[in-house]
Image 1: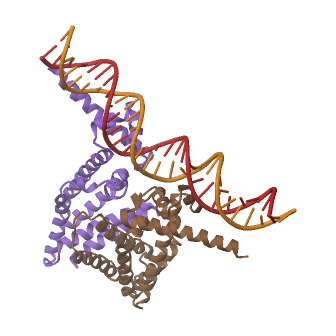
Image 2: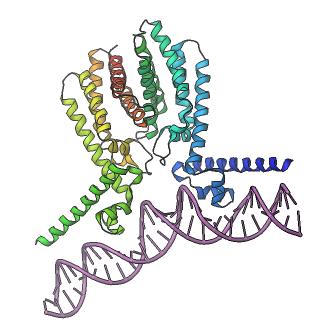
Image 3: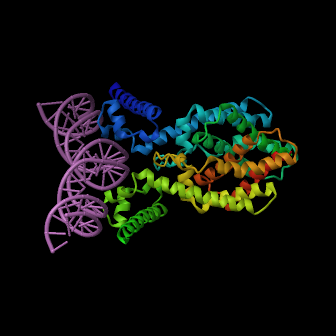
Length: 200
Length: 200
DNA sequence: CTATATTTGCTAACACTGTTAGGTAAATAT
DNA sequence: ATATTTACCTAACAGTGTTAGCAAATATAG
């Protein structure tokens, strides 16, 4: 019988309406301004209806977090495929990460700019291994190429991510409206410096 | 007459009581958990009394922000004085910055981990020039030593801060409880890499 | 010393948050 | 036609930041 299925479809529709609406609010007013009441108003249902589809507000945020991490993973994997040369791969990954952050500011803030609302984003990082493999493998290749296998690639992996995150965070703080040119240069400078350091 | 003065003293005392109490709450429960009501309860006065001394909650946060930036500035200046060699200066500044962040987690979160409560921390960064001078000067010296005066020291300055901030943020996210050893190594690795890069 | 002015502090409210208990009415199943 | 599940809502609780308005304590002036 199709009734149960229609009900499931309607339930899914409602769930996705909630997410769409929430996303619109975030885009227009920021994460700080997202509230259950605003969502309820916008979908023209009462508040508890939202709670029929999400246990609480954090569950909604985590849903977006999951989406964000999936998108980021995809982008980084695509970037890596562009070349076979490990140094070029690292540069491409850095570039893709950078682009993800600024083309999807809302995602990035939610995923990495802690403290938005006591939301434990760690819960939805895919497997820690995905990013690690993605970056650590080319790093190890470069180290081998340069006969520096003894160097701790785990260390270099952490350094790589930290540098990337720092560059982006500082830019998002946006104290000093630096021009786009300089920003791209800072990225290139820092990452190429890191890569060079692997080989010297 | 001393009456007006006593009143001023009492007013100052109350103000400082509010700050002390607020700081205690933050230390025990975090920034998210700081509220005007809790402060009022703790000082055993009613809510509006708090508003007699601070225009709003943001004003309290900004006060702490100011304190934080002052302390950080002092620590960095002290670190720089420890040596005359610009490379050693940079390393010492990096080290001092790192120590500040983890010995004063609450300050650092407030100052740089945006989004705590729509608080515009930029308002209380001392002069942008202070940090800039502090770091840019040794950078320029190193560049000169190595006859690379054409290199953009402003670029290198931004890279330096971004790297520092990234290292600390990533560690504060604390996904993967890396041991202290590795953390210090990541710092040394990244910063010494940067410094080397100035001289190559 | 009394009367006026000022400062001090409080109660109570408004407009928001997240969240939930409990009831009603409609849709479905028996 | 009756019973049951589902969908949905009203109303509330416990928080948040913030402010208007009033009462009591204190200081100043006559």
